[in-house]
Structures are given as structure tokens and as C-alpha cells.
Length: 66
Image (cartoon, rainbow, N blue to C red):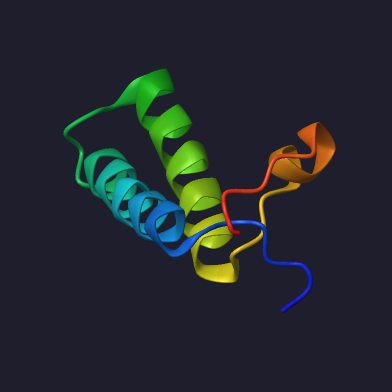
């Protein structure tokens, strides 16, 4: 697809990191402000990993996909 700018390994790392951060945030391991930050970042990582497109990469003209 034309708009995918993440390589397979990048997507896997993002999905795994997103799941981990969401589990820590929603599981109550990390609470308060840090818990909220974990939930937000975890959601962003999970979504960008599943979709394969990172807007920050696009702004910086970075592509991990060859």
C-alpha cells in the first residue's frame, strides 16, 4: 500500500509495546498521571502499528519500510 511507512519489524514492536503499556495502564500497575500517559501512548502505538502508518514519520520524511 502506498501510505504504509513502517516496516514489519517496526509494526510488531509498536503493537507489542502498545499492548504492554495499555496492560500496565489499565491493569492498575501504573496509576495517576503516568497511568494516563501509558494509556495514551499505548493506544497511539497500537493503532499506528496495526495501520502501518505513522504521521510523525511522514512529517519527518522517515520510512522504515523499503
